[in-house]
Length: 217
Picture 1 (cartoon, one colour):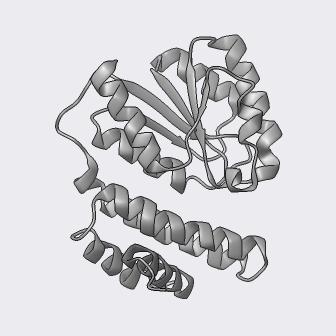
Picture 2 (tube, one colour):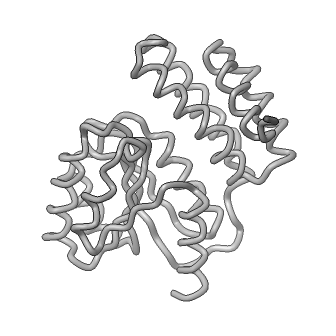
Picture 3 (cartoon, helix red, strand yellow):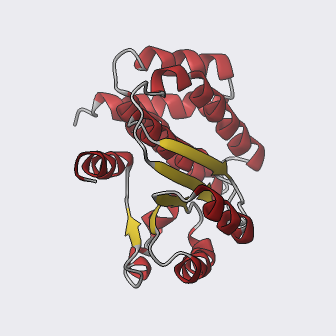
C-alpha cells in the first residue's frame, strides 16, 4: 500500500523532530509550505507528527527532554510562518483561545488561533495553563464571540468540565469550542451535556465552522 505523500512527510518530520535539529526541521517545513496550504501543513504534517511525539512520550519511548525539545522546535517554526498567516482582510469578530489549568501543551490551540487569523478574526491567544479566574476576567474585558479551549491529556477532562460549568454560570450565551489530542481516547460524549459546547476534531472542521460564521453570521 502506497502511503499518501502527507503521511510520509509527517513521518519524516517526526524523525527530524526526534533528532532535535531545529534548522533541518525549519527547512523541511518551509519546503512543504511551498506545496501545501497552511491548513494542510498544520493538519497533515505538523499535527500528526506532534501526536506521534505525544504517544511516544506517554509510552516512555522518548524522554521528557526530547518531547519538550520537539515542542520548542515546532513553536519556533509556527512563529516563522506567521507572515504567511495574517490576513489583510479583517472582520469584526473576536475569539479567545487557551489551555485549561494544568495543561502545558499549547501548540494545537496556537494553530487553531492561526486558522482564525487567516480568516480575518482577531485572535487572543492566552496559551498554556490559564487559570479559570483569570480567563473569566479576560472574557469580561474582551467580550469575544467564541472561546476555544484545548485539552491534550485525557485525565484532565474533569478540569475541563469544571471550567465549562463555571463559564455556564458566568457567560451562559458564550459558545465554547473544544478539541485536542485528549479526545482521541474518548470523552466527546461528556461534552454533549452542554448545549453551548461544540467539539471539533480537526482544523478542517474548525475552518468550515469559521467560514460558515463569516458568511452567515
